Image 1 (tube, rainbow, N blue to C red):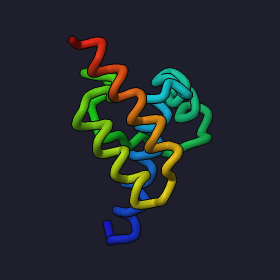
Image 2 (image 1 turned 30 degrees about the horizontal axis):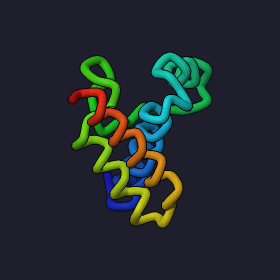
Image 3 (image 1 turned 90 degrees about the vertical axis):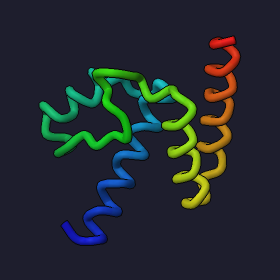
Image 4 (image 1 turned 90 degrees about the horizontal axis):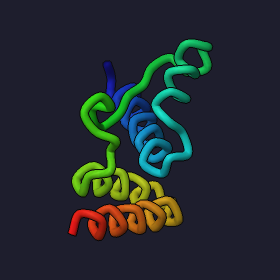
Length: 90
């Protein structure tokens, strides 16, 4: 894999994580897209069998990605979710 392929894979992983963390898509939705051939792979920065991506570390990684791409509204939405998740743990 070359650098551009790595970056494209990273971008897909961050977007998939965003969809799952914000609950815009479920894992089942994404699996359906895989079966239908709409998408070719399912990169994620976490193991979807172990967690839903709503951990401080994962959300921080996704926020950082959307900050670098200047998609601040997505980052703000993720910050709200992170704060909500933190408050529910207390």
